[in-house]
Length: 420
Picture 1 (cartoon, rainbow, N blue to C red):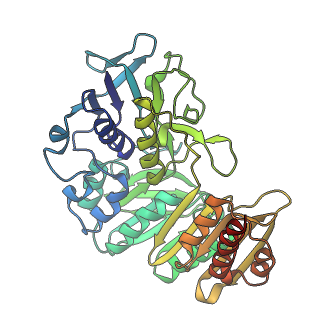
Picture 2: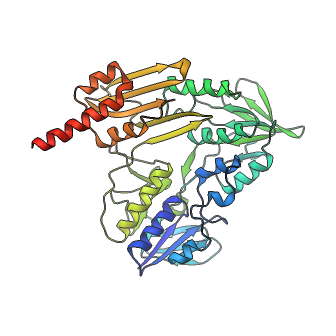
Picture 3: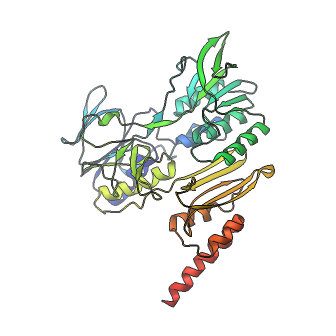
């Protein structure tokens, strides 16, 4: 049996290690298309802040880690998948045969349609090569424009601000982190960043970037022009699907997978940012481009590749973000459901916010800002679909009692189980 994995990020690495553990005799080939050892993109901000060096970004620290496990690590780019023939074409020539294939190709930055976006001095912060280029230009007093204040943008914001740069953030939607925070929470994050000396423009677009006297002129749709020494684009990502063109494998936003992470081809699986799998909260298929989902996918896909037939319960939408010391989080259906009810705690002067979303007496979503002690409880209640009973009404009166509600509801379940 030969297992081949395309993509050497967290999903691919965890899958390779799991395959080796479960099948000592199989061949395991891990293909990555970057020159560096497999690394975590989520570690790049810490690299930019100088908290870690390049080795600190590596997913596994030992130079001989993969060889010692009997995992072949090959640097190459796959050009095309021939699912019917169980064969891969490599760019520059050569082929690879497989018995089971895992697509873990991740995602790549979306390039906004802005004139000048390819100008020297404009970078994504997606690869280790990007990190090196930004680190070489990022210093105290540098004028930096960050395009995008989504989840990835706000992670990069932390590193840029820590450098002492004169930082301006431009977000086209009406609040920061709009895909994980509602208007109140997103606005509080904006105000927090402004209080820390970061200029933030929301509901604003960059319309052009052009060289100007040794710098860059960044034009906004308001007509204002910002001078910048460095522009960092963080305007979203999309899955890497191009190698599947003509393969017959079904795709939508990502590779469509079933509860076993199997694609429309029985011998091809997908995991991580490229996989469109079950959403725990909705039951529908969606792409969740976060590292915890990638790791979970990698483990489950590997187990199914060796025939264990393990079902994936679905990924819980989960984001936790630290923005200049202000921790925010969102879980599940944080925007609520039709006909559902909510509870809200709002203390803008203290940068505190808690929003709970209910479907009947079940917590289905939550948003938290400036409150960290309840993060595990919120996720646990959502993921277990615990019935809150009378605690739903108590939480609507005082959302801060979430820990009491968790203990009360779970202890009641245990008590009722003992009576049965």
